Length: 418
Ligand code: EPU
Image (tube, rainbow, N blue to C red; front, side, top):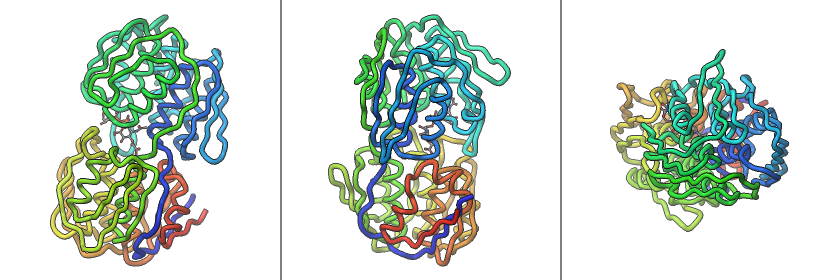
């Protein structure tokens, strides 16, 4: 069990490089099931979730190798197995993305139901309804979803909610379906645009990703092509918040500021200075920050994956802030831990009310999920004393590549014990 010790109070200074996007790497790796041939994906972050997806693909018969510093080589042949292993899928919900490409490619998939997790129930009904609309039969069998179709048929799909994973999985399925599929009320996240760009490079005919309507014209086959994953906007947003919470002065390099518009506007509203370049931003704060209100929404709204980090930031801002979580029903597990560090926060249904306190103080804490872990790291960076964060590998290592090295380089007093 890896433990992280952070001695708070150092303002972060200097430059930090952002890694590739976990939430792009995962669907793009799943999409390799649709292809023929060999490809290299670059800017892949070496994170626990990415390793799980690599194992899932290997279990289905693909050869997948990781090469330092950031490349994943994948060899795909036509002998793809149809059963995804229970032990892997229950570890990471994103493994369920494979159901769409598997049915499209081999006509049959048996994938375990992923179940809920620390942030909510997270059902998969939109995936299944969408696959049925494309002509697949879907059955439940001993905890596994069995989906099959000799050939999927393009159709109009309306998503009741713009689910990121369902949009991605159905988009992948439709690339090899017969005819045209139109996904309405699709998720618009930058990772969906990245998936479209990758699949189009492999010969798919997809347009509209990044808007509410995605049009996919099915093709007979797709050929593997090399691709570079976009930078991780949530890692970049977390580093921006780290600069703000420590009253530091950081230059965050290698990310796309346009992907973080809502976060940047909210940082500025709180009194943080943000100077954006084309692929970088300087972020600094001198005064005590101001309270503000936030509601998480699907992209381009404020990302739920930045909500816990902003909870930490606003817990030391001047005044009362309200954060409303509208994506996940249970994403306030970090609140209890922040209270142990002296934060004054009340939970009221889907909202939290934060009364800013002048400072936080160190305490032993435990994360419930990846972004809760990030929130605790941020709180620890500004707290008085040494905070101990337990179970890093189960949480922080899932989404932040080389976090200890990166934070040390910009002046944090942080060490890990294995
Ligand atoms: N939902 C359903 N039915 C479905 C699918 C989703 O009810 O069939 C609900 C979920 O329960 C949730 C909401 O819709 O309440 C949004 O879920 P969505 O499907 O959009 O999320 P996801 O695809 O499972 C991705 C990211 C998450 C991120 C969300 C929202 C990946 C691998 N994961 O999850 O990232 O929070 O979109 O933006 O892309 C993280 O990185 O920490 C993380 C949790």
